[in-house]
Image 1: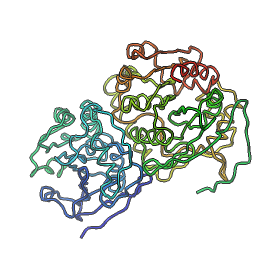
Image 2 (image 1 turned 180 degrees about the vertical axis):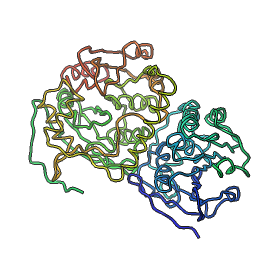
Image 3 (image 1 turned 90 degrees about the vertical axis):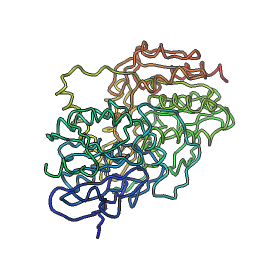
Image 4 (image 1 turned 30 degrees about the vertical axis):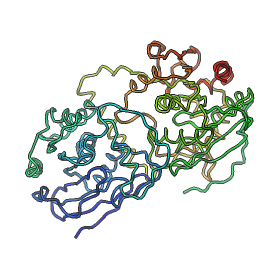
Length: 217
Length: 310
């Protein structure tokens, strides 16, 4: 049976779900763009020895859908940081958009993120390495969400320069003290992830064994 | 929560004139305060303030333009001045808000004056919606690449770690954060650090319209969850490379006096990017807030430039 904790990030209430109880370091699950936290622990995360939690990002799942949009990935990094403030040191698993956010928070909170696992999922690509076209939405989007359509629009086109992503990987590898700071599971390799995969301290692992590098850290 | 009490202090400053009209535009659910000066039937002219400013910083500049025959329209950006505080702020959201306010004003191409972030924002607007602008004045809002400090890798890692943790620590504080209350003069003195050449009377006036008086003192109206300084992957060259695409008459202005909030963009960083319709005017003796520091000079420059598109 899962339980949900509500965390406040600025004007947004975030839903943090406990998927499984346990002893030891938690695993934090971050969903993909437009998704919500899973109801139960996904099969490939079953081997994790400790408790498993999952966060609904702003505008997703049971978290607040705020008015007026304004999403960018660094704000979701702060969503993840709010979960870490509650859970303490954790290993972070992310799908798609959640994988990019897991990378960011691993670089920005290297003492709290004890390993990040980056997997395929919606929103893995983002908007590419440079701003593409400019488009200004002329009329309001009907918000029937979650997910918030403004999240789908804005987080689906956020710019992710490879050197910017690599910097976060380097911060995680240098400051976490872990031999492996980041495990790449994703088969798809958008430019940001290609750059991350080339960094020292980053390892490519099969999905079935993705929690292994961090289970005994 | 502190309760707002009506401000009883009316501060005046020579040439400062409150807006003649005030209306509200709802942009994607966010209520924006729109301020107008001048004849409602005159041709419209949009003014766009910079980050951490507010529309009523135009209280001297705007009347000069209005008195020359323009309907001057300015708005408080989300989170600023009298507009709603939003849950989130982004460049894209500000562009949408700009379009909503322009839509509420006119469907014809309109001249725009933007300062700092407002200038940069409208330069992107010109690239996205060229049919909506008639002319663009960019007041010290042309960003350029500053060289990275030459420090060893280890030091750079440490600096970046502090920056990233600092930003996340700030986000953790936003749920309970409020602005520090002070006296009106105290806020004026704090703003003086950013605007070192402004007379104290002018600063006090700006506080009286940009701050509100709560029971425990004066506070800037701006959302306390907004933080100065950029964060994220944004690069200045992304803005500069849009400049050559601007098709409408463009006037760029740079204030070269160094200031805390200045962008320190040198003329030689802008000149190669100017479009054929562009012109650059440089003031050695003014800082970043050109139109607040010398409203008269910037208004007459703007009016002379706008004569051509009238």
